[in-house]
Image (cartoon, rainbow, N blue to C red; front, side, top):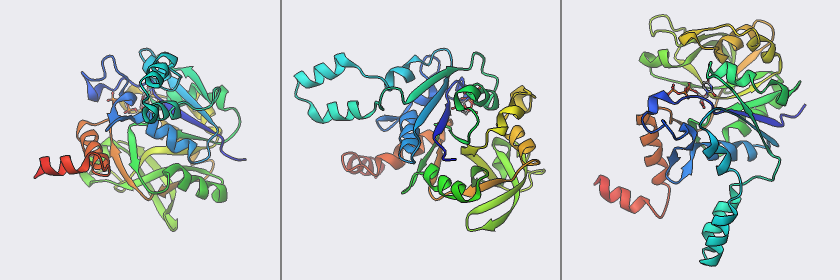
Length: 284
Ligand code: UTP
């Protein structure tokens, strides 16, 4: 079955980015002039995804408004002959009905947020994108993964090597390479200390999951940080069916972290003809 649906968990509190995220959803932080969530939604749509499922929470209405029309703004842009800006604003809004919203009424963890989408997803494989993992790549990373998924027909997570001393920030993989860029995962450990980590291969925020994951998440077992962790559920899943890691082609920025967010802004600005000369001059 084709992967048609993508879940975007956006109900987290973004505590690492306070005070900016006190009233503003973390996923609305802009890299140059585009909010993180828009990059992720565009990645999904450009990968062939047909339905966007947002798992939101309290204080996230800015996200919903961003993907809706603003007739007043459009009229003002029209009256001022700002046709180019009008096109940019109109292009954000997918065809009506493409986005479905559901709520996580308590931020109990990423695994729990995904479980909240169980009835909207139903009994079919689906993608998960974490907007704060922004990836700069020629081909959308989800598209790269879907190509492999269509052949391997098993759950998959994007993986990358991280510094050994940073394993305690990630879900870490124990596995063997089976083909170009594909790792057969034997074990997944949430945030292990560098001394106990089986490798420095980390799972990052792009997944394709089979619907069996919902039964496991439904048991609501708490893990690291007393949260319902997706990594723990995947660890159980891989005892029942294969789970693969995919070494993606691209550069990932951790935009949930201040340093990663600033680096993303610089990297994306340096690719813009209207900004690069000024930025280069400033760095000089
Ligand atoms: P993070 O692990 O970055 O957590 O979530 P967070 O709460 O947003 O941020 P910090 O760690 O407090 O700074 C990864 C993604 O999962 C979502 C977040 O919105 C983010 O997109 N998430 C996390 C939920 O939707 N619900 C949760 O309970 C936790």
